[in-house]
Every structure is written in C-alpha cells, then in structure tokens.
Image 1: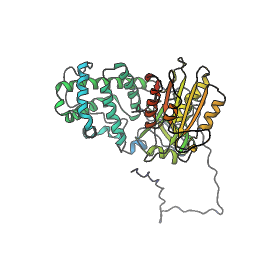
Image 2: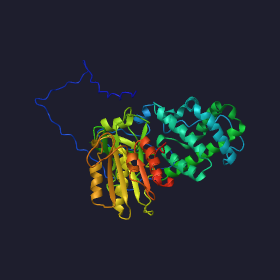
Image 3: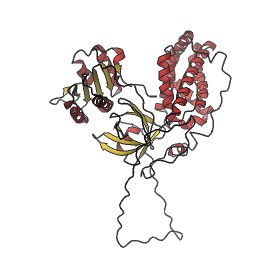
Image 4: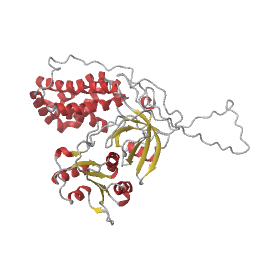
Length: 476
C-alpha cells in the first residue's frame, strides 16, 4: 500500500502576551506574485573531482518549490545522517584468500553457475540476508537506499548475479559494468563501499549455497566480484572527472496529455548531454532515494530543455507524484542519460518501431533525430499502440512529421475498441500481420510484456536478433 505523502507543516504563530500585534488593513491588499526568473542554460558542464560532491548554492534561488539537493538536504535529513560524506565504510573483517585478485577463469565460471542454480530458488531469502548483513555491519550505507527496499533490493542483487553469469563474456560484461558504475554515482556510491558489499555478498551466498559452497567456489566468486568492483569503481571515477553524479532540474512546464499522462518540461542546472532514444533516472523530493527511469520524448533541443512523458500507474509512487503533484517551480534530480536505443547514423537500414503508451516518447525522439539529419534514405514504419483511441495522445505529432516526410508511415493501433483509420488488436499482432520485416532494425518501447511479445513477433517476421533494440531490464 502506497504511503501517504508528507503533510506540509504550517508555521506556528505565537499567542498570548508575547504575540505580535496584528493590524488589519482597511481594505484587502492584492500582492502580485513575483515573476519566476529562470537563469540561462549553462553551456559547458563543470569538471567534478572523484570525491563526494561539496555543497554549492542552488541555481534556482527563486523557485517557489525549491528542494535543494546536497549534503544536509531534505533527502539526507530524511535519514538523520550524512549520506555523501562523513563516516567511511568499514574495512572487511578478514583478509581475502590468496589468488582472489586474479582474473576469473573458465573453471570459476562453471562454479559460479552451479552455485547460482542452487541459490536462485531461494533468491528472496538470500537477498534479504545479504542486505541484513550490509545494514547490520555497515550501517553507514543504509542512507544510500530508500525506506522501502522492494525495488532497489532486488535490483542490486539481480545486477550482481547478472554480472556473475556473464563473466565469460568480458567485453559485454565490461560495457554493462561501466554503465552500472557510472549510474551508481547518483546513489552516493563511493569506491570504499565495494569491499564491504563484496564481503556481505560472499557471506550470503555461502549461507544459501549449501553443499555447493566450498573454498574453490568462494575463490571463484571473489575473483568475479573483484572484476565487478574494479570496473564499476574505475568507470565512476573516470565519469567524475567530466560530469556530476546527478543534475538538478526545475519543472518549467506541466501539461496533462490524458487523464493519467503528463508531459513534463525540465530545465537542468547545467548542460545535460543525451541522445534520442535514451532515458534518464529521476528522483523526486517526495520519495527520497527512490529512482525511476523515464525516456526523453524529444531529440536534444537547442534551448537545452528536457521533455518527459509520465503515466501515473497504480501504486506508482514516483509516477503519481510527477503526474498529480509536481508543478512548475519544483526541483527534481536526474541521473546521467543511459540506454542503448540509439540510431546508427552510418548504417542507413530501414526501421520498424513499436511504441506502446508512453513508450511512444523515445520512438518520437528517434523520428525527430532522423528528420533533423535528413532521413530520406530510410523507410520508417512506426506502430503506435494504446488501449483506446484517446490514449494515442502523440498521434497528431507523428502524423504531422509523416506529412512532411514521405519515408515515414505511422500505424495507430488500439486493442479495446474499433475506429476508422486505426488498426485493431494488440501491438505485436498488428506488426505481425504486415508480413516480413527482414533487413530492418527494430526499436521497441513500452510495457515490459508488450516489448517481450513484440521482440518475439519481429524475430518471427525476419528481424535478426542483433537488430532488435530496447532497454527492457537495463536500468539498475
């Protein structure tokens, strides 16, 4: 059940002998609100050293809903402790065995997969034990996590297990861990946190692996985790030299597109680099330490503003706050741009794109990028799906783009009603009815079930496995 938002506490006016004298005006005085002054967008991001960020003055001092983010801010005070500086992580309790710093071997990968087969049926208990060990023995890191651990708990443990499974694919694993390390900076993760987390991971696995756990298996896990920690920490330290761990972004526009979908326009406090098709992770002041991913709805704009489409979902803490509570003047935090739904400008392959609900946002951004760069060499088919016609809130924009670019065709699809000019049925089924899509690159965004079904439908329709792009399950 979703917690109620925190109430705003009104200031207390003293009463009695010491109360100030209040003089009532003869007539009501109307005070015009001060105009909101938005500073110009910075051009160059500052270089940030590889240390915890220092307090700086906010760039939006006149924002009426300002929620400053930094050491001692609302987020930090929610835990009554200093989360970005202060107490250093404790050192591991014991020295690791000899050879733990060596690269993982093929035998290590075998042992890890065998132990994972034992742990996975008990993953919930193993995960709970893992975090219990962290918070009991290293309470200084508790404030890096949200109060409700349901999502973040599974996300971190799942990432560690995924990295262990991929230990024999070093290039792919390195790319994944690099993104992970860069993204974890927004949580306040420091290099010193990796060692104690590794010790707790090994202890949790030892408890739940049973007879599959021995000295050789422990050494294998230590080698793999050593690789994980090294790549992630080095990626974070490299990123810290050129970009901040997170950006502040002021809400400068909030427009309802449907009864439960809002379009948010944000102005970041400094230049925010991203590409069409990517997403950001976002934290609100109402739910500290809870980060959720949202795709950009436009290609990068000359004015530097960012546009997101957010649908309020049942029990969605962040999405409901953004749709029904956020207003111009509120300040949010953004993590770095991420995602692999990027166009290869040198390829020139024809495209088929599926966007379900607010999943149309990154698809529209990709189309805009093609329009800006001149996409006449490609043929692009966009299938845009919703349950009902009124859910196709971005259809007019796509049709406008198609009217000026004959290489673009838009296919609107609705699943719960029939309408003239619209395809009926589920989005993957509508794509399948068009026959072969061999030779095309495919981009998918939307609900997880739709993306999975769409990817399978496109594979049956001839799209090569390596030519299907989506970000399902990537964010961590």
